[in-house]
Each structure stands twice: as C-alpha cells, then as structure tokens.
Length: 217
Image 1 (tube, rainbow, N blue to C red):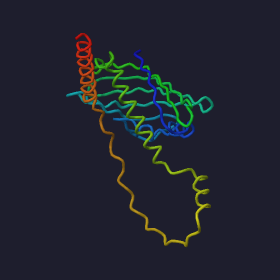
Image 2 (cartoon, one colour):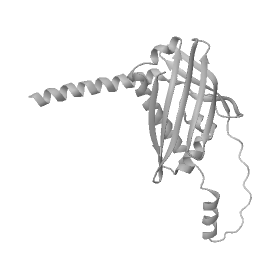
Image 3 (cartoon, one colour):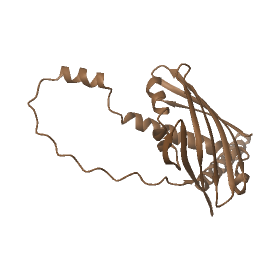
Image 4 (cartoon, rainbow, N blue to C red):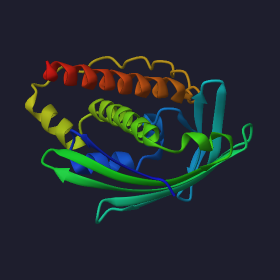
C-alpha cells in the first residue's frame, strides 16, 4: 500500500487540540472536499469526499471508524469509500499522535491507502505527496482558525466576570433567527492542486538552471 507521512503544528495546548480531533464534525469541516452524509453512530463516521480532476469529478461515499487513546494521545482511523460514477474505490488506514511542544501541539500522522479504478493513475509518484502536503497545510490552517474562534473555558469566563465591576441588568436580547444550515461539501479541485504543483516544479527547475549558469560565469 502507498504510504504518506505528514506533520503539522497547531499553536494551541495539546488538551484543546486533542479534544478538537475527537470532534468528528469539526474535523470533517476542516477537510477540503469532505462532508458528513449522516451523524456519527457507535464510533462510525459516514461521509463523502468530492474530488475534481480536470473533466473527472468523483464523489467517494463510505464509512470510517475512529479510535482514540486518551492516555497516549494516539488514534487510528480506518475508512473506505466508493465512487459509483467512475467505479473507483479507496481504502485508508490512518494513525496519528498529538505531541506536546510547549504551548503548541504537533500532530504526526501516517496514511496507508489504496486507490483502484479510473482514478488509480493519480495515486503514484511525488505529486501525491505534494498534494498531501498542501491539503495538510490547509487542514491545519482551518483547525487553528476554529480553535482561535472558540469561546474561553467557563473557569476563565467566571474569573473574568469576578474581576469586572458590577453592571446593572440589561434587558433580555431578542433571539436572533437561526442561520442557514451548512451547505454540501465543496469538491476538492485536485486539478488546480496538480497545476500548482507542476508550476512550482517548473519554477524550481528554472531557478536551479539559471542559478547554476550564474555560478559558472
């Protein structure tokens, strides 16, 4: 099975990051192209991953199982999905660990996966690793933004309230209408990622060539 190893750092304490990683809906919301098809049930997750590769659009629907060990801050995910339209299947086994680094947390993960069918041609080579790098970076940015938007814990709110002078009671605010329900997951445009990878590779190659010529003159 092909394997991808990734690491990313989130600038929040491990306890807070670990709690977020155990929130399936939050994790799915941070993943480009991913969405839940129904609520988690008995440790199982039911979701969909939408991918666009040029003229090919795939929607892998399937289920996964999440297991987390609070004592060691490690976990595993086993999942599989199928795209009916292109007759492609994928399976993945993910292991991850949250490592404390001062006030920040490093998350290390390893993904063993297989991809069969029409899209199997895209599961080989360094391009897959580079796409994984970019997806991981985007996931980390989304997770950090969500954590930053969290309200302070109740204890901190209580301490802050005690230190503030008393204020007269305010009239009850009128409840605002609920916002619109979340829309379907946007597809992951892997074609755009592939183009970005190719562009960076060409720029790096030209820079290397011109740099080498400059050093020879």
